Length: 315
Image (cartoon, rainbow, N blue to C red; front, side, top):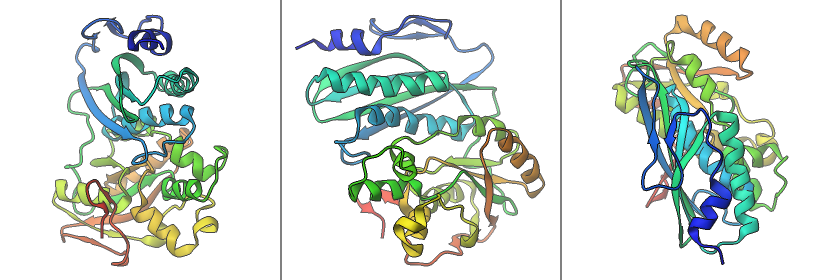
């Protein structure tokens, strides 16, 4: 049985490059060199088996997803990803599983420009803690607190695919080429979209717990209310066919795990925002507007408002 240090060296240590890592894997601390004049954006997420993902999901997808959900937070701030740290807890050191997990994790590192700069491996129930570090010019971060009454609300991509994919998994679907299952297990963090919008949007948040729950966070931070147009919600292709109209709407509003960006924009900025995202191949859909009246209107009262840890699905 290889030791934790052997596993780190074998699966998570890569050749040093020109990535701002002055001292990487293998010491007590990692030493990083941020770009002069930039500020750091740092976020941490923990993914727990059978809470955030099925414990029997493909190891490649588990590794990929663990990094993706953390990178989504950097995307919501408009930050450029640079480095990450990972704390991996495993019930056993099964090397074939680890090789696939590492392959998925490193695949997203490579496409997003992230260097795995350090971490830890220990024994226990399967969970993955990932800390990501990004950079952006001072004063340019997208926050939850900048939205204003009169702004429009818009989302990138489509909604409901994460929850639709979870339902597909529960119904026995295992093919990652299924678009709904891929949306759930291989989400695409909207990093470039966040960067493109950071001088246009007044506020942003990534949709992890469900549109209604995350919109509520944005509204509370900004001191505004919202009016949603549910007919405008961009549903993930195949969602209605799999779930039906009512459950598809529930998935889009309260399902979570979409990792799209929810942004507020001045009405005059919408055309330019769409133009920029179109060059990235990312659609931007206006789904409502913000007002000075508190609360969220335009959706049925029966829609669950999103996921709450320690409570499960919110009533």
